[in-house]
Amino acid sequence: MLQFDLNLKMENKLILTQDMNLSLKILQMNVLDLEKYVYEEIEANPLLDIDEEDNKLFLQLMSYHESSSYQEKSDENIQKEFIENKELALRDILLEQLRLLKLDNKKYRIGKYIIDNLDDAGYLMLSIRDLSKELRVRTEEVEELIRTIQTFEPYGVCARDLKECLKIQLINSGCADDMIIKLIEDHLEDVGKLNYTKLSKCLGLEKEKIIYYINVIKKLNPKPGLVYKESSTQYIFPDAFIYFDKINDEIKVEIMDKRIPKLKINKMYVDLLANGDTLEKEFVSDNFKRAFALIKAIENRKNTIEKIISYIAKEQKDFLFKNGTKRTIYLSDIAKVTNLHESTISRTVNNKYVQTPKGIMLAKDLLSRGISQEDDRISVEQIKKLIKEIITNEDKRRPYSDVQISDLLLEKGIKISRRTVTKYREEMNILPSNLRKLDKNVK
Image 1: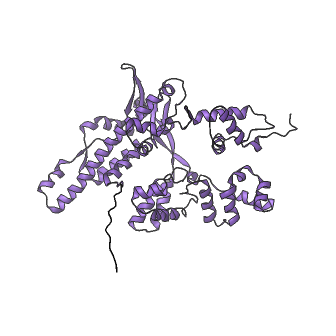
Image 2: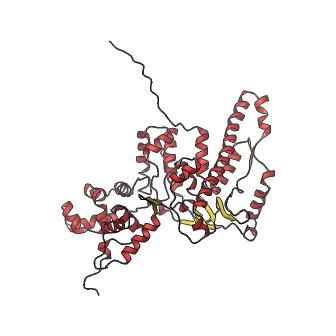
């Protein structure tokens, strides 16, 4: 006999509304991206209008920009630097390949979101679990689209780490076999050190075969997303301006949002909510919600950037206004003071530039990475400096291994693993000990 039970289960779930998704999207944009997006929305949404009174300064700026004398009339206090703009953006190339698959709306949305979360080198920045939560889909659906994008050119994109990146390239180019995959998965460090003899013994292969495999691996691209070189000029415009107010004797932050037109709701369309027919009311209501959400999201972006950059500027005052070194700032430090989530802070500082007394800098570069010790915190830059000093002063005939460097740092009260030493050494382009070693007969 069948029995039916009714069970109640309570659980907390974060469900992102359309307004929340828009707010996060706006928050991640730099000022130039936001300017472009706002004008696109003005064209698409008839309820959005530019508030001409509040935009006189903005319109003057745009007229200067369009004139040949713009560079002479620009504000001397705001530096403008330029970077090279990608002739073919990685994102556009991948999205075009995604469109060609003719997926249903849901799969296309998942694929597009994954592509939007690749870094410049082509690596996936979010975990499958995070993607699943933000998209409100099953992890299996995310995994399916990740596998699909991993077949796109340039081969190697959408990997989670270097090993996966190299394997993707081998599989897509038809050069993968069990042995070369094993080399990448289990012996990549020895491959980098060119330990032919050790690898030959471990894998039971002739040295010539090992050399062949390593040469194949050396031809792979560890950063496939960077194949699209930058060519045309594009100005960088800072999102915030950090300066010292001598009158009030304090550090201040100004949000550079004058490029963003001030928006207002078109009242003519709002009147249709009261007097229009059903279709008109529905049309106006939907666009009103979109317009109001955009205005609110832009204001929230401004307040969030100001909050975060103000805290960073005060913490880095010795570095910015004196000749001091950068302090170690953790996302958790900012979160405690600003009452913002760490992921929100990360989204805010990413891809945004700040005008400082030291010139224009990426906001995230003011967040010096660090390692927490028992009594204090020490920045990665300080650790790298110590590693460099140890290697500079070592006996060149008997150079320190990464394990020995880790032990020497421990004697100084800095506890980091051998792997971390290796990572920092490679970031400084310093060779491993076996390649730093001088011949004993060299004097």
